[in-house]
Image (tube, rainbow, N blue to C red):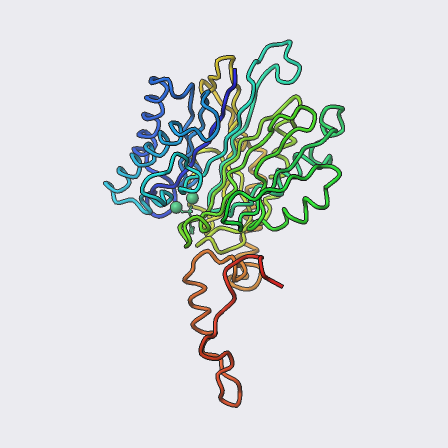
Length: 397
Ligand code: 13P
Ligand code: MG
Ligand code: MG
């Protein structure tokens, strides 16, 4: 059968600040998912939270971008928003940016990642005799938080030794989206390994370019899908961090889990953290972890699932970062975070002007820029003085 895995994620309210959703909200979303299974819309589901973001992972046969599936998720997030409002939680309904989605959650605020594929897990199936996948969910993160780890996992044999094997050595196609282009999904397709350097030229800019999907060149199958969109480009103003989610299929014709998650041992620095305006390390954590740590350290969770022939998976799961091996990385992230925080607001510790998510920071800067004067007393910038435009790249010299 043609099966679709959909991840639908939103921040619709959290307790005691931007920490985590309440248990009542989680229970409500789970109950809505169970009802959707009973009605035959979904085959199966799993609901977890990473920081303040509720993430629904589900399977169905309706294809990506399906109106009914997206409307169901929207309604579940509305339901949880109502509970958040009732109990006075912070940021109730934060990521629901429109009154009603026009059939698709993309562009309406919630994050979406979906993959459709032929699902026939039998021993004789040479491409996918078994289907296993991981769900990544990150909080307090800019949209390109997965650029480096997914690139290393799918294109660098220093991390993915499997790339030296016959089927994987044909490489992967990286579909990269320009998140500054608000006219539509603007995509370039580059092939690893031959376009290796070109891919890095783009992926180095986590705020503008993001991995949209990764496709196996051996099979043509989609290996990974990421919810790469810039929330403030949708909303026009800061509403919260993008907090991306991703589906990553593993084993067989794709990298193995350890090859995919070992790059996260870097706890690499990304844009996000407090007020979406700082540079801090990404800490791997178990699913259902609240953001209560240092400053508001960016977090990422990774849960693994297997699918039976009917597309069911939620009977059990593996929480990849809930393992003592990752305690070392958590300490590393904490150490890196303390080092970065020790320089407070200076230079690399905060995002550059064009990426400061809180428009209030830019207002503060602009108010001062307008007051600059030449030494001889003439206004240095004239009456229409303005700080640089917000755009992160286009038009910039
Ligand atoms: P969230 O998008 O997770 O709500 O974070 C926003 C923020 O400003 C963190 O300081
Ligand atoms: Mg929030
Ligand atoms: Mg969040």
